[in-house]
Length: 257
Image (cartoon, rainbow, N blue to C red; front, side, top):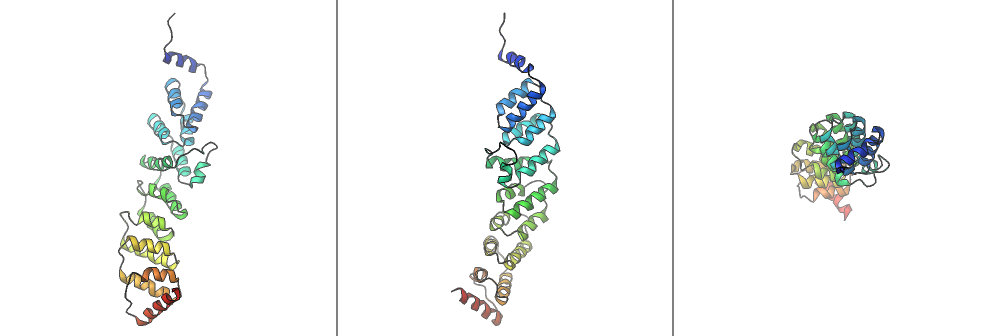
């Protein structure tokens, strides 16, 4: 009697297992990032679309996402579900399913870029995720989304102007597409909020008109504003023509010493 090859033996064994059990095993293998097991099941049994999409949603592995995307047509619902989880805070992402404590940060950022590069994620969803990341200071997520297809320029400007995180300024102010006007507006907004870190970051990244900085310092001094902010701008050695404003600035600086 002729012996069975490994492939034939595998086929006979897997044929004894119901499609429901096979689908469940495929999904669990994705959840626990067992790519070899997934490849084995995919090769020897038919895996139905609902199991493939569920596996896509549950895995935290970029390699597995690539494997599934290459082998099958992934539903838009599955892709957007993963996108929502992966662009939340790291804590939310880790808790999105019961057994994902092993998820890696580098895979998270890779998954964001991968999903955006498919061209399947709606631009409005990318914009929303970008603003949420900027609002909460998720710098790595925001940087991964920045070069995504369809990210609106106004969304980038909004993130720069209205969200007071110096780390965000450090990322955005080095990117193309931001006008001096937008940088100046962001500086004025940060100054009005007394956010010294953002002001310093903006001044360190961009060559801004001296008249603008002088105007902000004068207004801060006249309004009894933040002395730290005045000092941060005044140490750039801009001259003030108005003697009253100059006196107020000097008085504010004296209060620091």
